[in-house]
Length: 347
Image (cartoon, rainbow, N blue to C red):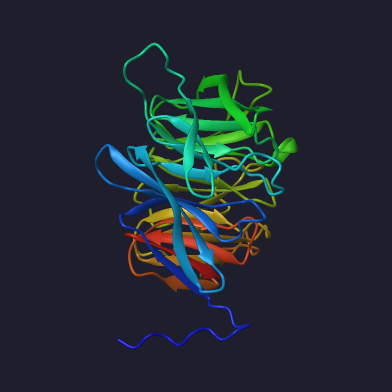
């Protein structure tokens, strides 16, 4: 097979690909301005020993390479870098699985800073399905669990001792969020962006909470057949809108918190189940969906509440796409993963 011609100077490629030594499940972009094309990938191996790998793109050679790899117990259900776009905090990465772990990423190696465990008295743990890291206050993280609860954690990046910031965490609050397993949690940018969050779960509902008034929650949407809802994502520019998707569904539902229980749009061009949702970081009317039909679709939803019939962009990958992340610091790049591959696509 002939090698593709090198990219001439000044002409950027539209797609870069990295092949991992294992199936990639979780994946996310670094947020720091000095680490533009750096991502973290989590393996999906059906045994105890799994891996997390930090990869970055060499913009000169157009190649991705692994910067460091570390062991992780069980697959990571989600992976996120600290939402620190100014580089004020230590270079931290969090993962969820059996517990929430916070790692410090160095140039050559990464090390565990703290393991956050809310269940000190028991020999078993309730696995975490997902988590979110608050963008307004990076000392706040929220986790969702199969034990029906969400937990809000406070992180302390303490004083510098020698050359090291010590990182530790504590439970700020734990609440029973749903009647069954909770599958996802996400902070909203509404009301200052610190106190509001929503969750979805196996009971088929989307519920919204306010850390200042945890005695009650608001049900924003309930699936009529009580099909489990697996993911939710808030619009990054307009906190009235969020997207969710049900188990094995071919569509993504857009909700408006001002009009509870009635979807304002259904994005239903996928031909197999949807696995991922990502809102554009810089636009209130663009969202990307990806699924088992190998497709990543970008939609323009300005026409709502008129029906949104077709996506404006479609990309066909080499396999079932199980994850999509839209880079918050470089909004013209989206990453997807399928099988053992991660690709970044210029949009």
